[in-house]
Image (cartoon, rainbow, N blue to C red; front, top):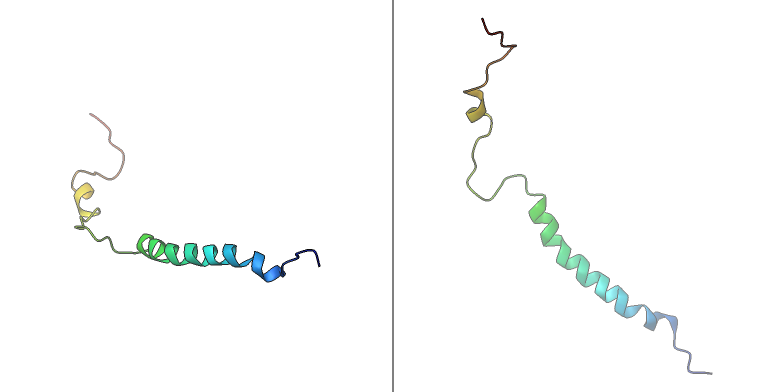
Length: 60
């Protein structure tokens, strides 16, 4: 033999790096997909409705 290594040894390091990267991404993706913000919530539907008038505006 000419020093040929088995094929499974060549794929160990990339597979381990991929597993570590996937494990690191799980908390990041979970934080991004959170439906409720962690900070103080400000209702966005009540504030703009006070100054909005519906329909076209025709000056007289």
